[in-house]
Image (cartoon, rainbow, N blue to C red; front, side, top):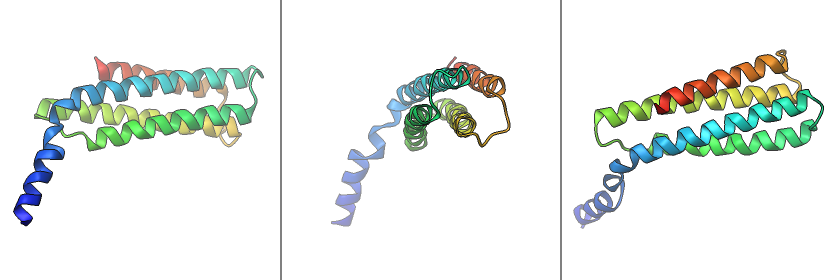
Length: 136
C-alpha cells in the first residue's frame, strides 16, 4: 500500500513540473523587475515630497511580498536538466538581490538608512540591470 501511495505522489507531484522551470524563471525575473521599477518610482516620489512615507511603505511592502512569492517559486522549481538548473540558480540570485535592494529602499523610506535617495535609486538600477542580464 505504501508503494502505491508513493508512486501516486511521484506521478502527481514533483515529477510533473520540470518542464515548467523556464516559465517560472521568466515570471520570477519579470515580477522582480517590475517590483524594482515600482520601488525606484516610490523612492523618487518620496525624495520629491510627492508621497508620504506611510503610503510609500505600503507600496514597498506589496512589491516585497510579490518578490518573496517569486523566490519561493524558484526554490520549488525542479529543473529538467543542468542547463535549466543553471538558469534557475542565476535567476534565484538575481531575485534575491532584488529582495535585498527592496528591503534597503524600504529602510530608506522609513528613515533608517544613511544613504540618500540617489544612492538607493542607483542600487535599484544596478539590480534592474542584473535582472535583465539574468533573463537574457
